[in-house]
Length: 420
Image (cartoon, rainbow, N blue to C red):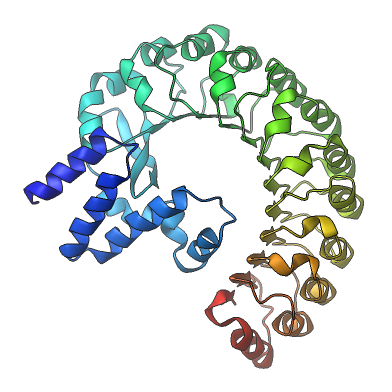
């Protein structure tokens, strides 16, 4: 390694929030022949400034799908001291951003070493042994981190209070808890804390406590705060939970809501629509929620999602009727990304999408395993409204294949923008 290489890398580690040394590093390694990594760094830096429905993200998902995670850059991961690992690593802005923690004590003891080898700003903490969170809360280097994830641990009131009240937690903007990662009492304390009011993103995945306690705990947040992204997948939420949830002040400032893998049903989707929060959303994930035709109709009519840019309705057994409701809704004119994977869209549904003026602004349309045959494929290929489409996915996992003629028509219209 050259002295310039080492100096730039050290600057990246010392100032992880700055892009200038990262871009200079990309220039240097490109001059030394590492074009692939240089391009990866620049791509991630550019994508970090953009929402997931931007055209640049759509192109990345098509041509460089690894740009979002950096798994192809695993060979660049440096060696870490004991207690910290790359088991759940993640790259952001071209460099490793998240590391796994097996021991908080080891993390605190080896912090200086860790920060010297990677610009880490997020931790995935394995808390099965219920570590003492005061070790983390009293650590000055906690101020370096923007995100903490806890996969288990069942942290209660005292544990979460120590973290929430830490003088060094001022830069935390994202928190995530999974399974036994937080008790209802701990979540209540968190929601009522100043830390919660500063959060921009919160993920609660497969939380072990009953759904009613989960929602009741979030009700402790009396002010909207800064929260713009809320993910609540796999939490057994039903329509009454959604009704209570949507009435909370924190919900009305959201731009990204993930309620996937919850049994909302028609009633849950209708409650969501009538709550009014859908109008402010940019991204909505309702995968595996089974809204049915009435639920979809409520979302696009009562919900009036005029600001929605990205909608995931995958794995919902939706058929052509529901797709026609989407295709004819004027409230979806701003939609850029639509995911209908693993639904019974069929040729009739594909034809409705192809004929829709409403969806003329789509950049990405995901129709994997959507029961589309030659007639639907030809309708998409001949659509007068899909000129702006940057990615069309028609791949299937079963033996159903399109005819050579249908494939040729799609390739002639969309070229490398279609996945077959």
